[in-house]
Length: 151
Image 1 (cartoon, one colour):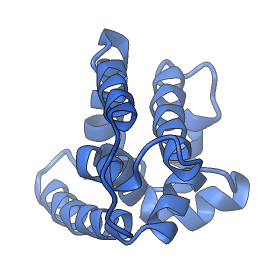
Image 2 (cartoon, helix red, strand yellow):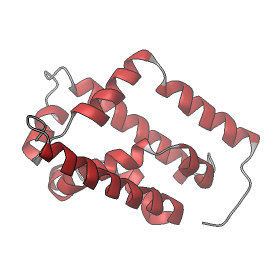
Image 3 (tube, helix red, strand yellow):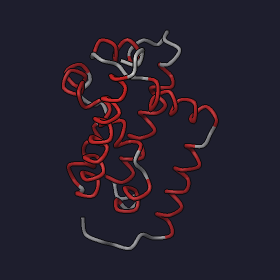
């Protein structure tokens, strides 16, 4: 990624993205997605993602659409990619979290986290952040498997 200085407008967008993440329902949704939603199969994933009756479906959609919108802002040049990657890790974390199921998920939903994936493919800093998240999640999964009731 070519190093460029971010503009004040870029900073405003980053701060607005942060502000949106602090909204009460969004905080609950993010906490659930990051900490509690650990599907082991694509079927478990889709039991929430496609089930509008599931109480967590709205949270799932809120969080994934938030991060995909944020990634699209970068891809369309509305915000500096370098600044975005420096200030945001959760979208990369979520993609890394679902990576073991990604092929099966995309068989049914090809657009799942496609913008975040495109960021990773287009910007080396994003790819590095994603790779770091994959390693972090590998350690988390190992710890979860070692803890009774968390598998």
